[in-house]
Image 1 (tube, rainbow, N blue to C red):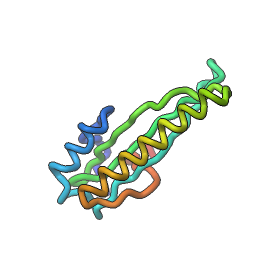
Image 2 (spheres, helix red, strand yellow):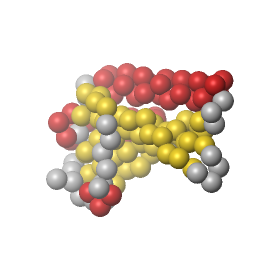
Image 3 (cartoon, rainbow, N blue to C red):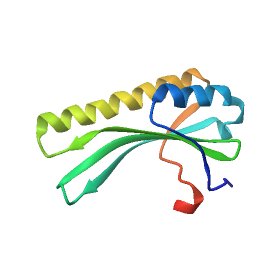
Image 4 (cartoon, rainbow, N blue to C red):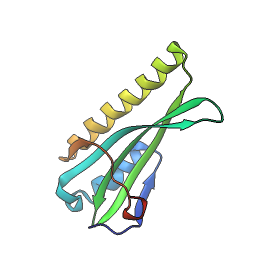
Length: 114
């Protein structure tokens, strides 16, 4: 069971990985979850794409949220944005596994958000 407070919220991958590395022995079950999240902005008729990664460290959520761009129903743009997200997921996976942790798909949410 986790506390509903987020211990660390990061926008930069290096900072998130540094935090995991410092407390790697306390990462619950050695799992880091990674997800590609799409949210709709109906007022602008677009969808925003971001990558989230998170781990429960010492009972609290440590999370990375990294925007990748807007999906605007234009093939060239949308391919670039989804490609950016895929590259970020691959980089997170590589760096998490280098720490001896396991990357799994999905996301952690603070209990108050569920």
